[in-house]
Length: 70
Length: 270
Image (cartoon, rainbow over all chains, first blue to last red; front, side, top):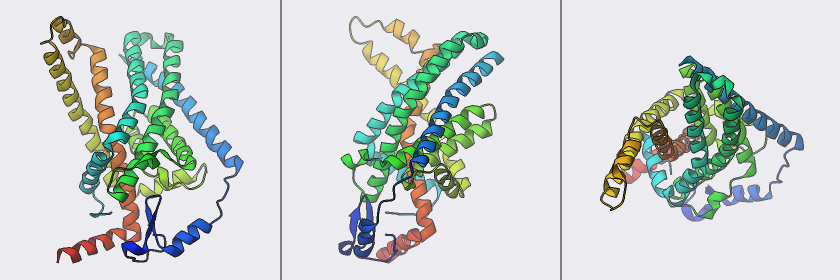
């Protein structure tokens, strides 16, 4: 519960696996969903793809270096 | 329900409960999605052993396998994300979650792919330094543990969350060492299962037992790689569950939920 009040089981409602009291649930439902800026999405996708691409390259490089040691 | 204060043993204990609740079908789904990635990793290592010191001349072959492995990682990460959510729902409700485990928020998945791909890159870069590789494994575990806490897409927020939960490093290192040992225990069990299967199959007429015994021996490099693959795949559900529970317990310790639960338990016991 976000308000951290103690409630009995009957007064609490479970939503997405988390118990909420009525005011907290109301606030959560009424809350406007913030739209993530396109720039954030783009940057996360680009950095993730770059890490995956570099990961593959480094995997080959490390493998070749270690294999060369034996 | 937070049952006991944050400690390595309590995390492992509750992870076992979470795995038993989520084994079917969610652990099975994660294992299924991880298999292509693990098999490709084994294939990459097999090719590396095959070409040996000449590896630098086989860049195209190794590069192709590495590229396919990276594609398979994305499938494996999705499977891990679903399993992590299933674990979180299971420990909250004390029952096996249904189809809602599949509804991984896109923001959480994107953040997880970002943090785990960074961990993978750091892991390969620091492979030579054993400590760096261990740190990358811990980082990767925290990435899956904190996945569902990400509420907005950001380049920095997922990493801030990771560092926030990395405060009790003692427990994280202990978990990494426990799972390192667990891989070898699982390896022995998988090897024994193979031998038992070959022994049972030898009773069937027409089964070429002597040939299989040679193939299922430590002298066969590919068999050894398969044993390691099997051991890692078997340990992975426990590793994911342990990190989900660690993050949950560490969060509860911060807001006092653990003390409240402990006090309620004391009241019930008296």
